[in-house]
Length: 497
Ligand SMILES: Cc1cc2nc3c(=O)[nH]c(=O)nc-3n(C[C@H](O)[C@H](O)[C@H](O)COP(=O)(O)OP(=O)(O)OC[C@H]3O[C@@H](n4cnc5c(N)ncnc54)[C@H](O)[C@@H]3O)c2cc1C
Image 1 (cartoon, rainbow, N blue to C red):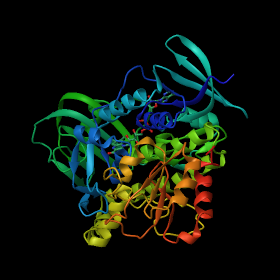
Image 2: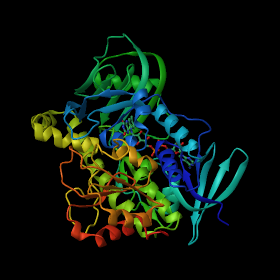
Image 3: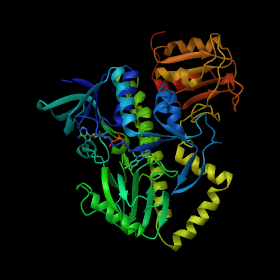
Image 4: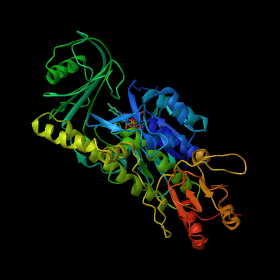
């Protein structure tokens, strides 16, 4: 017997975002989180432009902004050369926010929409058949099993769901060790603030232009890996690492928290195997260079949520779910590559100095800097949307547009808050609106005057719930066939008019 429509393993940011997306589409979802209470360290995470645009489309941006701090520059391998201010987005900045706030905002959102979140419940086994998935669960009341139609592993880099489902996780073994600690050291001025590439490695001392909070100290050591990654790091480990990297002897007076991480770089070879899917760190891990992992994971969740909901609600077949892998796997693969490149650029040594000089010169040009900034911020992400009516907007993220409507001006971001498809009719076409009504249970239609900001003429734009443009036209004679076929591809067959 199937108890649940969807079970999400892992109540980290990605699992919570996915749960909220599924609830927005009316699917019942239970989140099983191993930890009895949020365990998140007060580490600052950088949220970049494409994710900020996505959060705006769900009405979450203001709350994120109110708890974070904006920054106009980003770094590439510790070179703070990327000017974010002229990026082609309304959100030309990055936002530093503690992961605890991210989890708090997203768990309140998911619960507010009706998701069931069960802390202290660890998924211990996963078995699937043609009709559903059975998850073994260890909870406060003992062990039991839960049956669901789909199980999503959002259970982090060491995902049990991924390994139990038999999804491969190929990649490269770690060669770099990073330590970050919130600590008081003495003597207090022993270490310079900011980012420093030194002969023994990299020192990141909060207080400079870094994504770390004040009072945090980080080291990256190359060609050195922890003997046992399962053993918790200690104050002594930080002290020794600081000495090796900087040559300075310090004493750790107070240690608030400490984490160790590596450049273990791996990616799930498939994001779906039958009824089990993976998202976030469960699907990809890499060195946290440029602050991209959480951004990737939140965007995975928004790409997957509406697709899975369409399948669960019977509008679409599992073929739609395969577009999740097709669209998101290459995006993460590029991030893995750019973090590998950044590691090479951070290594000590003269050869790296010369390489950095070349990259710094390129990054200092407007075009070169913008290219790297668009990569780190995710603004260069497009979706390979098959289309029979090519239009420059198809596959791109919906731009900010002021839409003059009969009621009041609005924008795509406001209209996407419901998580439905969106048809923006800019040519007042009654026949198109009549056709659109056949998908009225999944589609919002708005008639608007053509906006001044539009950089491509369009009569109509069809936007997917995740903000990517599925269809657009400036040649009405292509309709109605191509419009209804695009809707059928992404939203499924029409309902009752
Ligand atoms: C030093 C550092 C700095 C970083 N900075 C940034 C940054 O600036 N920007 C950025 O975008 N990213 C950053 N990242 C990456 C980011 O933290 C991760 O990508 C993000 O936390 C992934 O979220 P997640 O929900 O996929 O996984 P996690 O945050 O790992 O959450 C997984 C959850 O699953 C739970 N779980 C695990 N196993 C089970 C189980 N069997 N059953 C039930 N629950 C389970 C865990 O308890 C956890 O709550 C950084 C990472 C590090 C290490």
